Length: 388
Image (tube, rainbow, N blue to C red; front, side, top):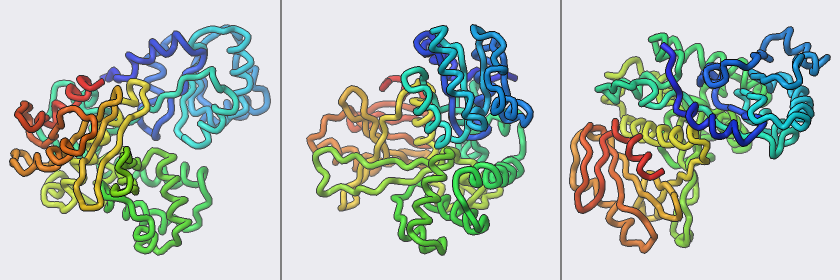
């Protein structure tokens, strides 16, 4: 079954405005499938293929027999030489949406694009499935979904999560890491990756992470950059505003995919998650990931932060839209307790322009009371749509 991606709706508008569309994102997030679905009449060129890659390096123009034709260049970072010829052709023709580029290596991709196609391309980041993409008819157990994760092949083929992620990690280490950095000790890097999973939803302390991993601070910083670059982790930055003297300034660490984090934590099934000490953190990670996908799928840079004062008062998520902050508290409980409203009420008294707070929890029902809007996990997408 072919699943229509939310991003496809927004691609049409961008295609009318740019001669080149660049789609990046993690491996296995569905970039190639999306490009072929959204642009069915385009000539497909796979630059991961060694023969095609060699042709691109030796005679790039030979790839484009029809200079006015439309092309999908898949995994183009393997042959960045083609970009100067793409620029030549689009400047010559001025045809909207003539080239669709896809790539998984964010750093190399962005470097080459910014140098060669500045002002000529829209750049989109495709992450794994959202809840509504993966389960359009709904699902009962958020615990099971967090454990399984959101990669298209995993869900579409009903694969065993353990087998999928074990393979994904091996492929990631063997291919992307060796492209991005000179990691001498893969065992140490794998241990570092697992330690990051153990810090899901926590404020990042690089020094502590480096010590636990047995590496120096510089190495830990470099490896964190690699994990960000290859769409494994996301660092949620704190909101400063005009209260910066008493605010925490370190980011919080999340994984783009909860299934990968669960695998690194050696969870064997969803039942293990129910009693795991990081259950709440992983539910929070799910909400943050869904919110990131909501904005990336619309071609909007995610306007997301968190808020934490030095005294411990924290708001898990702030969304800044139209100059107004929308505060979110995230609780993994299935039943609402009045104590859950405390931080939202405190935040409302700080004098910061803000909308009524939201409380996202692991139940299904949604309603509004005097304190805030209560949002069931399955209604999150609709709530984000109201914010914009």
